[in-house]
Image (cartoon, rainbow, N blue to C red; front, side):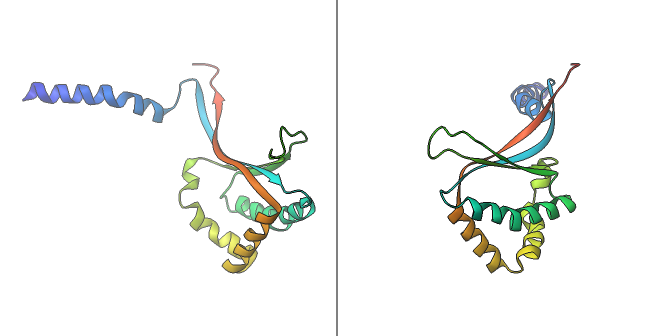
Length: 151
């Protein structure tokens, strides 16, 4: 009986080691902020309306999220070259301190967006208008890593 228990523990340790190592991270890097990268293509002829929406809606919301500690930072960048007509031309990044900040983010952010738009209906209407001005080409999360000099 005792031999079987020891064998089970040893087997579990060997099988779980890769998962535990992945959770602990690499000895080569230290994990940092988590960033949502959204690549957007502005629809032809909608540039002014797209940028007006960024100024009137996105910026105030990002600033309030930052003030409340919901996000660490944000940025907007433009791409001046295109590989094809469906390529992106605006990159929007929103950074969070860590993965845990994303837990229940929607519920905590609801008061920010409702405070800006006034009602859920107005918020939805703004989203529907935004869809007319641009298309999301890609959206993904990345984790910043600091390379450890001394290992």
